[in-house]
Every structure is written in C-alpha cells, then in structure tokens.
Length: 49
Image (cartoon, rainbow, N blue to C red):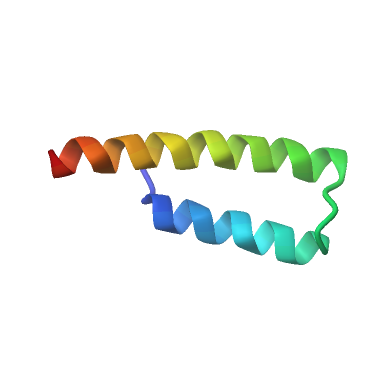
C-alpha cells in the first residue's frame, strides 16, 4: 500500500497534466486515487494509534 503522501502527489500531478479540467478517463483515475488516498490516510491513523 502506498502512503497518503505518495497518492496525493499522483493526484496533484494528474490535475497539473489535465490543466484543471479532467476528461472522463482522467476523472475515473482521479476517483480511484481519492479512494486509495482515503484508505492510506485511515491506515496511517491506525498505525499512529
């Protein structure tokens, strides 16, 4: 599992490449990345506890 920071960096890169407007395919990728990011954040919170 990647860290939240790694996934966040990929999300930022996607938006940068897209110029702020996502195509349908990019939106699908974005949605998957957000789900992955959320899971990573939850995992990091559990590890910290």
